[in-house]
Image (cartoon, rainbow, N blue to C red; front, side, top):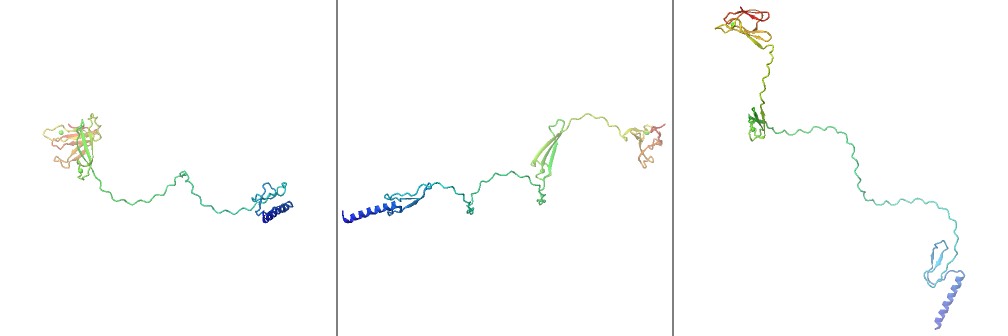
Length: 256
Ligand SMILES: [Ca+2]
Ligand SMILES: [Ca+2]
């Protein structure tokens, strides 16, 4: 070994013991060129300096485990923080269910009259034809109807909407009773003095109520002939038979 190497060995040995001596007297850790780190105790112990990885550096732990102190009083609540920045607009929600129908509204006012429409075209007449029915046991009439589309005013086989109808006669009924005479029904022909041969006899009518209705003239030539009512009294015919007769108060006609 050379003297230079021997000298360095002695120097390192001296430095090592000097460092042990300084540590034993509480002068801190040995600085071997590495940087020490400070770590926090987990259980409340004092801070501990530990090695930064130098395998030759001695570990030095200081202090003793302290006793737990009394809990401190709670601090005052802090001031509320400022409002945060407004977030982005969210996506639209789903469409809701339709609501129930509302009540019917009130009837609105009557609207104004509309405009008049254009004039309509002329219509068609109904025309018909008739002939004796051939299917009625007691006779009848068959009618043919149509719309006069050719405007001939007569029924034709080519007119539109052809229709037909047959009306049959009914059976003859039994004769009914004679109606009672009215007040003015003639009930008798009266020929005063009877039939006179070769003469056109004047006659008059007796009505149902007894009235005697006669054709009266002023002379045999038929002057001023008129209907008249024979009242009770004496009368003479003007038919040339010269018949004198009497109408009684009871309306009877009498002659000799
Ligand atoms: Ca026609
Ligand atoms: Ca007579």
